[in-house]
Length: 127
Image: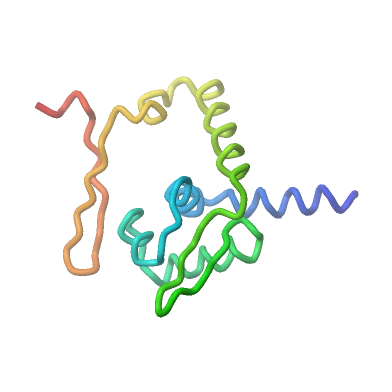
């Protein structure tokens, strides 16, 4: 087997995690620090740290330190293009999930102390 296939499979494994895809989406247009990321996608700092370690190691995300803060950004804009292509394939191959894909719902984050949950509400249920 050619090594390029192993490398390709490795990067696909890196992206085959819902939390990492959320991180990529959050970093799509902005460079964010760890605190901003935890608040944006409702993830603990420890869990974020684990995922960021993998994303940085695989070259998907770059990090830089500024004082006490670590800032993250995508290493290449083509990562978002690959994500967009995968999303387009979802539209084509999974029409039964069009409600989820069309974002006809809103997500309301609710945090009490350090515990956070996401509540999904259908647009039709909003008065």
